Image (cartoon, rainbow, N blue to C red; front, top):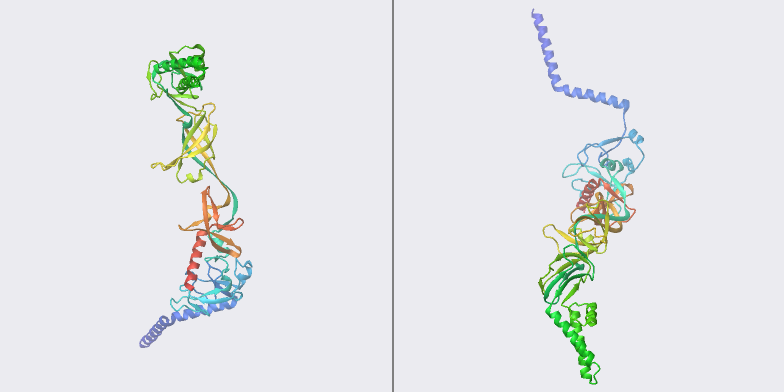
Amino acid sequence: MSNNRKIFRVLALVLAAAATIGVLYGGNLLATFQHNRSGQQATGGERKVLYWYDAMNPQHHYDKPGKAPDGMDLVPMYADQFARAPQSTSAAPPPRGQRKVLYWYDPMHPQYKADKPGTAPDCGMDLVPKYADEDADPNMAAGTVKIAADKQQLIGVRTATVKRGALLRSLRTTGQLTADETKIAHVHVKISGFIDKVFVDYVGQLVKKGQPLFTIYSPDLVATQEEYLIAKRGEKALGGSQFPEVSQGSQSLLRSARERLKLWDISEDQIHKLDATGEVSRTLTFYSPVAGFVMDRKAFPQTAVNPDTELYTMADLSTIWVNADVYEYEVPFVKVGQTAQMQLSYYPGKAYIGRVSFIYPTVDPVARTVKVRIEFPNPKFELKPQMFANVELKINYGNQIVVPQEAVLDSGNRQYVFVAHGGGTFEPRMVQIGAKLDGKAAVLSGLKPGETIVTSGNFLIDSESRLKSAMDEMKH
């Protein structure tokens, strides 16, 4: 019994000692076992690492594993993997030994440079190598960046060729028709009297030039006719006098009476009739001085009139005006003399061609528009005042250098594009932009036809360019 207890005590002590050793050295033993096992596996099939590289910037190579400046783990490039990769300088950078390192620098403080790899004294980050082939062409603008082909594909870079072409624009607006103000006539009489008969007696009537309008009785007109007949008889009796003063006086009196009748709008035919009959007419007929439509009428029978009375308003509608509303920012593109097209909902499918004749000098303070006058021929009088119309103006900017609008980056005080050069190099180029329309922009300066510019992915390239410019400034 006592022997059995001794055996149990010895076993308990052995187990306790084994547990203590396992707690203290078990981790080290396991690590050693795993290390030996991994070493045996490596010995059995070891892959040679040429270098480590930044997955986002494959042109950056490193001698040992670690973290890239952007915080990502460096990726190993194995010898067998490099052998299978396409041998392209843009898609797969050459091994470390084939690229000349100028110096190593601190990515957080680029002004710190070292002759060999190591860690930065301030932040403890690994120094980054600066290769000779990373330096941009000194003839390139500041901010020029070089991006590998695989990274271009990753960020979706697309390019387009700068071309020269015609730039056309259609400006559509609305307008209202009105009579040609230069062809509106207001009919007055130059004497006082009373209207006897009226021949043109309703608004809207089309009147020809020389057509009778009304007859008028005027005591002054009757007296002037009598004076004319007396002067005519006197000139007949005294015109042949041997005294020059008498002869010339009679002739002068006749001319004065005749001129007074003409100044009162008495026609030559009426004067000839007065000469032929020798009788004074109680009433005289007045004729239309213009051709056109009667827009207003105040001539009625037995109405007293004087020179202040406007008897008729007539408008020649063979030419019609359209006052179109153009926004103030579009006015610089409208020129006097350019062609305009008009369509009316009343005549579907029919277009009228006119020309801009005047641009009004004031702006509507509410609508912020400017009136543009367009003249249209109206031989059949289809176009009527107060109609509304749709107007289209063709604006031709001429033959200009044109680029897609998405290629232009606008920072507010400057506009620029990225010009693509060979080998994945992108240069920021300041440009001056003109008119923009239909997804295109006219380039006034900064580009030449045939150059290649970035149309998509330029915002990411811009970020890379700004970062490079900032780092270059910190280095200096």
